[in-house]
Amino acid sequence: MPHKYNLTSLRLSKRKSIKANTIESEAPPYPWGLEINLNKEALQKLGKKAEEFIVGKDVYILAKANITSKRISENVRNTDSVTIGLQITAMKIQDHSNPENTHKTKKSY
Image 1 (cartoon, rainbow, N blue to C red):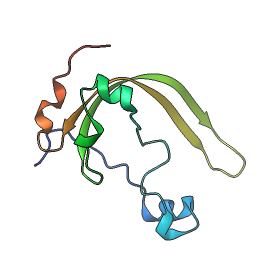
Image 2: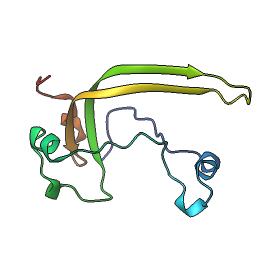
Image 3: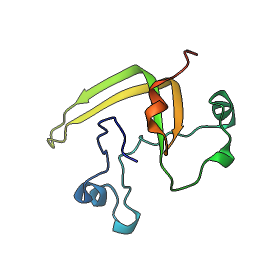
């Protein structure tokens, strides 16, 4: 089902993925730090149970985040680095089959 949001893929290019790891088959498909891990307490607050999630399936998330840091650096090897720290403060998880309802969140933050 198509979604109404213009989402941008953050998948690493093949070259950057291989460069990030020496073994091509183990190269990560996405940059470090983009994975979100939810513990039991977070799932309870979201009204979800671990059993509802199927590994490999997609879900939509809508999140509010606080910008916690900004780092911009450069070095002599000309490898500039930019990192923005985001602390998710509220979120909603929507089943992949119905992304239209992700914009309706209750204010619990």
